[in-house]
Length: 81
Image (cartoon, rainbow, N blue to C red; front, side):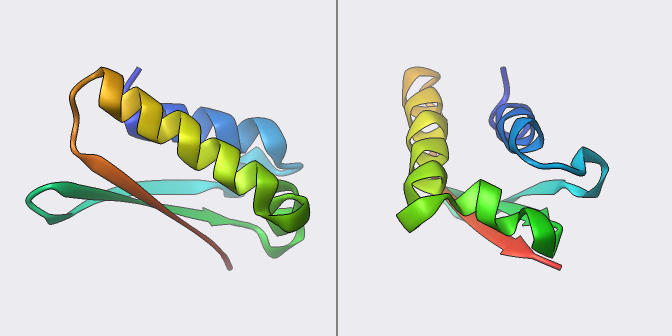
């Protein structure tokens, strides 16, 4: 599974309004890929989790998938609109 699709699947599984989730990939540097996640303001708490635990777990899963598939390093930015 590609990193963007995996990220989108994980985020949409957590939110109340999956139609409002936007996940985009940016190749910033030659060895780093950034994945930008935008969710509704009301769903931000579910995605971040208490103390950032959920967001860190998502980052760990995506980074592990990138490592296994020998992809670039991945940074995930989570924001709301």
